[in-house]
Image 1 (tube, rainbow, N blue to C red):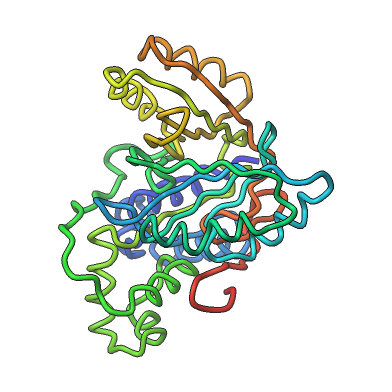
Image 2 (tube, one colour):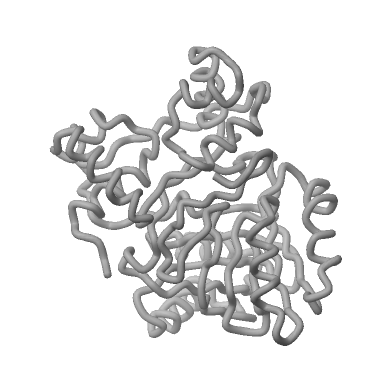
Length: 329
């Protein structure tokens, strides 16, 4: 179910520069801008690919947490529905192992996590138990993964992340607009925030350029050529952590890599072509960091919600986006 190469080239270009203009993309890919825009609208309408924004976790800002849930027998579906409807929960994945459901939560800080998210989980009578793991450092996130279809000459160059300044006004409303459409224009942001388009453009540059808001191009996993998601929790000797991360970053489909609290100190998630690659990944990690211990590896069953976007059984986006501060888009 992998997409044609012309579509994959466009997705790869937008992974690198998700807010690039069609003129910039046309110049890089050797295609007419109108042709690329039409191709993108078709792919987006089919739910195969989309650009979205979310709360950034750069520097000291933002808190990323991972929650494993065990549901009462027969209650998994209702738990999934409730969690997917919650804007506080970024990603909801059905698991194949001890935990029925895995959650990814991005909050402004740990206090927001304990105040707005943990009570949702602890008060749910259909949840038997939960395990919370907090990221202490993020080495890779979903916006870092790349397809491998463009030549170096075709790849746009992104600018360096600027230092944090003052948080722009209306950041929550701006983030909600970008979550629905990561390529939203300054005029669209202005309409949502009640500001002048010139002011909205400045706020956009500040929020995205400093990492306060992260923007990424997503692709339906079943169309990526790597339909098997697997997440690991491992223990790595501190002296070997850098080597382990360097090895994992060699995988273009690395969706997550983070130092964590708890019984393990590193978690990572890869999209793979087949389950047979799991052993290859673990063997390579063992060679790079001989002291590593794999505590848990978990093949995902289905992602129901990814960064606020609701997904179908076939991993395509439905078009429904659950955002903070407003109705689903």
